[in-house]
Image 1 (tube, rainbow, N blue to C red):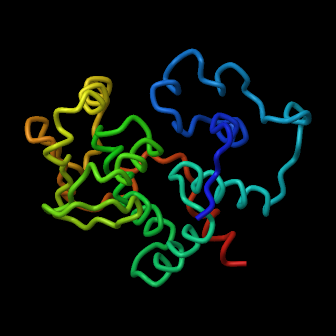
Image 2 (image 1 turned 120 degrees about the vertical axis):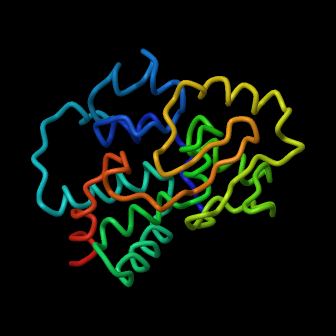
Image 3 (image 1 turned 90 degrees about the vertical axis):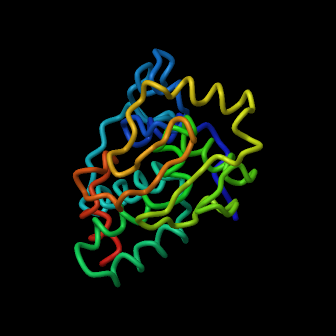
Length: 208
């Protein structure tokens, strides 16, 4: 599957806010959004008036980039969300939050979602005792994510856990710092999701 391989800081600048795609760099003075708070490209500093469609498109693109999901998969999630009971936009965010790579990141086992995808793909995590190497694996309430036994003592994870020790963990995830496990207590409600996303605009975009 094709994946964006360019400079991710350009994506944050294009959306006009931090999407926290580069881990610790996003919290430092080197963050590109702080240094150059305008869109990339030769016309990035020009003033542009967005149409209704443009606002909806930007909302969809921002959500995709925030969670690191490609267009085809993102639309598939929207179709699932639309079939579920409840508010479609909130259902969509709940699905995105329940991805394994996102839960690994939210639990503090990775410094960014991109790093979480890489670690999951390399087989460093188990779900309910079985190794899972699919970043898009959707978790349910009650599922337990754990760092594999052979990976717990690696220098890589020691550095990650130390760097993320002071960062808050999502309220819907229960982390056991000693066992290095994270339990999905419940799928998050909208007020428990801090994603900078206007989900109603995404619904409007796909409903045209």
